[in-house]
Length: 361
Ligand SMILES: Cc1cc2nc3c(=O)[nH]c(=O)nc-3n(C[C@H](O)[C@H](O)[C@H](O)COP(=O)(O)OP(=O)(O)OC[C@H]3O[C@@H](n4cnc5c(N)ncnc54)[C@H](O)[C@@H]3O)c2cc1C
Image (cartoon, rainbow, N blue to C red; front, side, top):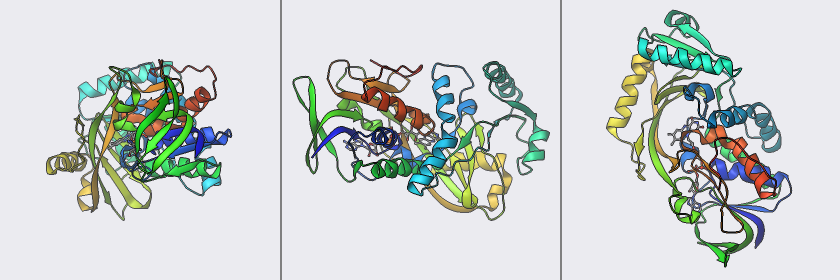
């Protein structure tokens, strides 16, 4: 077997790169040791929270904004091509403040975002409850970001992969990459648990497990565990996601509500703990008391791939010919996936591209 490009990792990032590259005619294989979206990409809540997340400006904000703007057309394209509905909702997101101090910080973030041309609407608690009557008086103030939204993360991952396959890509599941093979400083292929595959280019998109493949000192990723739960309700409790620092409730189709997420650095085990779930439930019920009547569905944990540099690594290896990396998207990999995929496809095609906020070498 021989491909132009082998992508290590069948998460949202690897599958997005495969989608954009194979649409341009490259011969691509995605090699995933479990199943597509088995790790962070299947665990995510799917928020496209550019303004809700970035209360302080940093260089990744512009990339996040650009990536968010790709979703309306992408959702239509993926549905037409694969039949998979990624559940894109352009509903906006409410970022809430439960005390005056947080409300003040939120108002400050509104002004710089509006100066950059973004929409943001400050709402009193009463104005918020006019729109979402189930929200408790515990919520003091909110900002509505109409351009933010959400998707179903696992479906997005699958849709990227199926689209890539429809354009000729090969998807290997249950196949682990054991080693990247090279001759001197040039990539020649990968050794997998099912044998050797030849290629001229390899992209490391292995999330929290990327470090051994990056072959650079001080460059790597580590896991930040997040626990999440979901409940269902026949009655509608909330129509637009609610976001607060480190906490969210996201209404999904079919009466589901995803409530997340805890933050534990450096842990590779995905155990769901009583303490983690209890803290999420307490918070959720304080904000939306009607959730007490909701039906328990399930709880799970995922590992956000954080980069040692604090921003995603996206680029070429400085010394090894044919080795590329696209990893470390931490808590925004779903949001950043379309831009990351397109950017990497440009790079692999040899185009000279640059995107603010990505760590490149
Ligand atoms: C609880 C939680 C909530 C989140 N919520 C959001 C959100 O609302 N919005 C958002 O934008 N982001 C969110 N994120 C972050 C987002 O999920 C990640 O940034 C994104 O999924 C990272 O994608 P990835 O493809 O890099 O990594 P992963 O999805 O982890 O994929 C990496 C893949 O590589 C495979 N792999 C590893 N080693 C090998 C090997 N040797 N051989 C073959 N395959 C290998 C793994 O099995 C895995 O499937 C959340 C994450 C978590 C955990």
